[in-house]
Image (cartoon, rainbow, N blue to C red; front, top):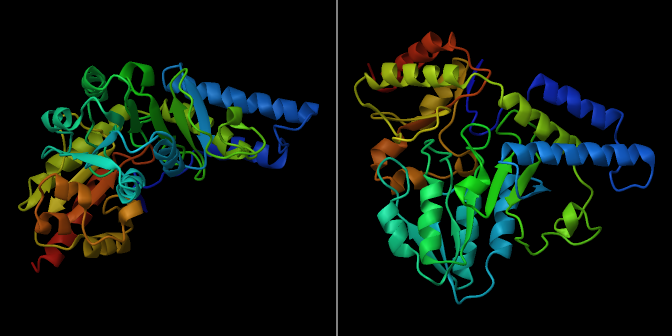
Length: 370
């Protein structure tokens, strides 16, 4: 099997599973308990927090959640104080941001959507027009889960603060963390969401980075864990796995993954009716293709029969009949209908190149009736 849907989830590293097993079978103690083995677990948990903080630039605070969807929901639950201000978000957001925004609209809040350029990045001119002095929250995805387009967060946050001095700026960093530079302080954000299972870690654990001296309303009240911001016994096994995965992912050969992506893009886009949905500033981990004359879900099924697993875009929106982000980029209905997403990870080998190209070419020819 060749797995090319790493933007949906990744295979855990062996060392991640081994490390997690220790805390599932041996060091299983509640880190809040008042005896020596529990103190040792609490210390390991804090070391994991510091390791992830270091990977995000070394400053600020990090609070663990059950997933990035929870982290994003926390932002929208805490970042909106009243109906006097407005919220600015991009049309390229993940469903976990977009649906929270729809809920805000339902409550009567002023939400302003920023257009995308044809390459999937934020339209900066439209961004500047949508922000004003009353803007209270901005949410801009760092790296698109659909196409891998990378937004220039540092520039966007600079512009936002020059207009709205007290604005809170959040970014969904799920597809960026571990894959492109993510120094949150340098990027100028206040809040940044990350997830473990996108970088070879376990499902069921995420985190929210919060800048120094910024206090969010508690997400869950109870025993006072996570500095009183998110009560509930910590998912120690998952947190330990998260930190181990970040360490492993920092050591992978990104140049090899970039070379595989570029080789596939060049070979496939030479064929008639295949175009690439990519940006000038682009993640090497994602290749989005629009293939004319086919239906992507049928191609996905045929490729699966060949032992190749690809995505159709965000797994969280897989049941939808269209692709909201590609539509915002100006792609036609036919282009969207034939769009697939190849997303790469450390387990993809350069030897996969020929197999993938041949399988895709053969399946496309069959579906086109040749």
